[in-house]
Length: 89
Image (cartoon, rainbow, N blue to C red; front, side, top):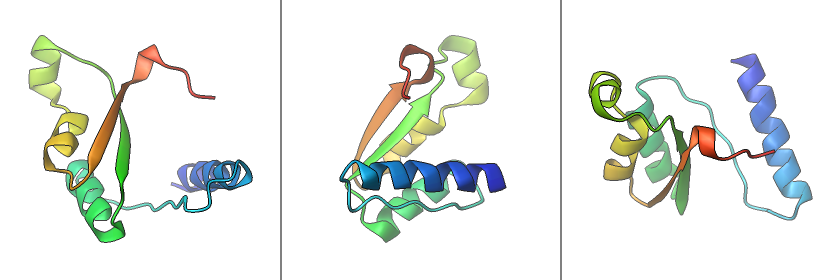
């Protein structure tokens, strides 16, 4: 958790340096889909950006898709990025 918090602080700091004034971060524990959707509602966010592994077929059925459930339940737009197809550095 400490590493994740440090990474989030660094990301927001770099966004602010780049001129994004309203960037915020939060950490929550619980069921991912529920926590993401509830945080979006509470914070009145405009966009959720979430990665997906892009599983199909049996893996998708067995594992499910947090990104898909968030996209269906979110109170705002959701940008889903396939994890292995894009490098964000």
